[in-house]
Length: 246
Image (spheres, rainbow, N blue to C red):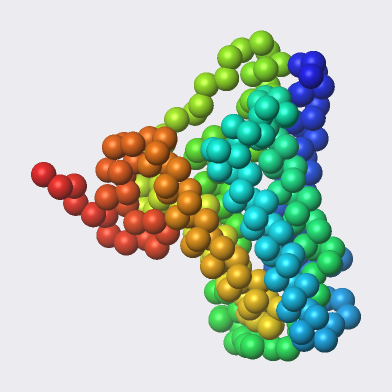
């Protein structure tokens, strides 16, 4: 693949991701976008449950399997390494777009907060969650995480080098602030429907499981450095900083 084609491909994949990310906030929050988590004709409960779980499983499997080092080593035999990350980002975005498109509404109400202060607090937490996600990606190199740095360095004929381990700002309080932000954003709502609850429970369960796999890969990659970090900083719930062992 030529340098300019790789760059254009990477930029296109990033653009699709960013639009999908913004749409996800609207989809979960039930705002602005045309298809939301509680809109559309309600399907029979069993059908909605099965379809929605399959859609969530498609995203979970794609997102986790393609992130494993063993898969990457196999995958880059067929996909140029320079666009491997961009392709991963593209396929993750397409899995989410499929979920948005085919999601079945389950509108029965679990809770509906009417108190204005309570609603404001929950909306504040919702947006804080999404901001936490975005800020956290920049703390560990947003453009590397989503494939742009790789194609840009290739375009400039510069060798790619991993960004490396960073322990800054939010990462001093939790090891995975991106996932913490997602959990807060998915649960903080003044109007919780059955469908929204299913989405929140399933994605939270996925995050907990996926983090076990990611932690294993990080220990294998970073060794003692990550082991020490893990001993000092909690995984996802901000807790008082642990003291280093003497």
